[in-house]
Length: 121
Image 1 (cartoon, helix red, strand yellow):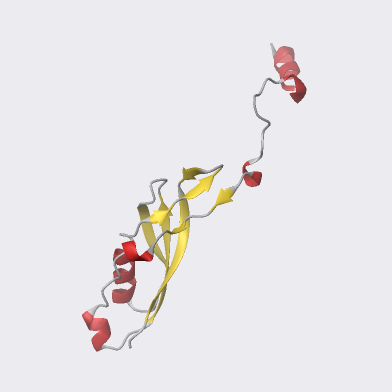
Image 2: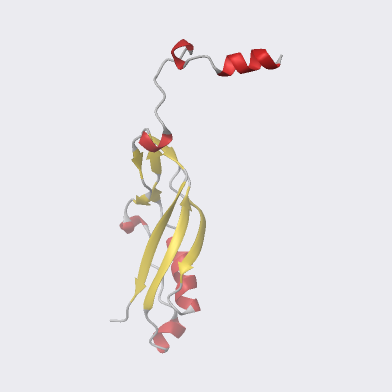
């Protein structure tokens, strides 16, 4: 039995029946996930305590985007330094609809970074 198994593993690929040639995953056309339209995404509300304390900063978020474009999971990667700003950005931007990533023009789940900058005018 062992000899038969080894001989099957050594069969040249020319004898393998395949309709399409194999293309390694890294060589397939890949489109990363990105925001489709910010007008469909409600702008996060600036926390009142942060306005009062004049808190500003940038928060970097990482989303896992489903093939449907919806956010499956979200987390803060780099804090703005203010918990209220981080939480508001995370809650607000998690409601956005994204254009999902694709491989071979088929939507796939993928993570995507996003930075939200809080400024006072």
